[in-house]
Length: 373
Image 1 (cartoon, rainbow, N blue to C red):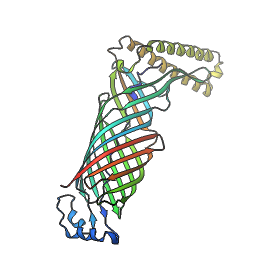
Image 2 (image 1 turned 60 degrees about the horizontal axis):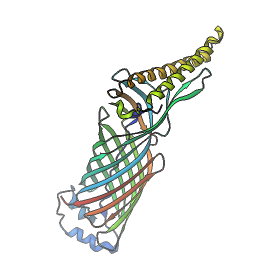
Image 3 (image 1 turned 120 degrees about the horizontal axis):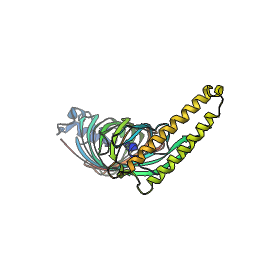
Image 4 (image 1 turned 180 degrees about the vertical axis):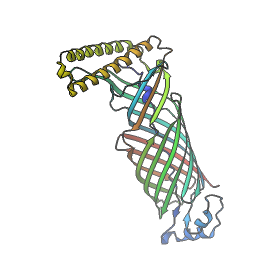
């Protein structure tokens, strides 16, 4: 059954990555002694960061205290889905965990974000997140049922995409340590993505440690930074939502797929009943046979009930709705990242970053402008 009736249940997992690679730099080395001395002598002209003047007079080169970044972020991440329940037209939800199997289901999302930030302390950057994105779920799954020998076979399958739009907002902070051009940054943010198909915004938490080094170029204030690190995603596991059936169902062949599925369920139920009736009373008392019989009946009843309910919803497909509940999680919480930033001057920076390994791939490009507050 190439049906999208379950697809929206698998909608939401995507996370947006934010990080501004700017840090407080300790000036060291004899060739930089003149710059270090000048920092000690010049009054620090800005209110932020707190203790900024004291830190500058100790020989630290502070970035401008405020910034505005524009980033484009793309990600494709595989997900695991459990505790799946689906219903139609505000009727009962049916648990489909036993009969639905997924193969490389994933969420792809492209996001354009704006990120205002300030240095609250010389070692602590705080920022806001505002973004628009277009997540797409890519689902490969099937409905499986057993026969009398407890051999499971697929009676319906679907491979499809569902497109959505989302608005994201959030907050983050980045503690940093900068020593002689090298630095360690521990980026953390939490965000909420508001999607029309969900009952409430989807929550995600991201932790991204990075270790890098900056290489100064000939022109003053110009440098290139490179880094390596990790990217860890945690998302709120439970998701509930509601969406129109006509938005996610392929109406051209859905009825035929449902009919074929119901026929196969009926055939397997007959096989199971024939097998059970052919057992002797003592064989029917065998724990192994009882367990096999109960499992087969439960799975066949679940598949038959679901397909029958879907069959009824198809009669009014244009006005029917799908309700769903599930628990979702990234297949891999961690992946590896590498990145680089070119600082044209203390006002303007360009940044690129890529994440790979595991089951998540991501790319980011951004432009940042900084100024003093």
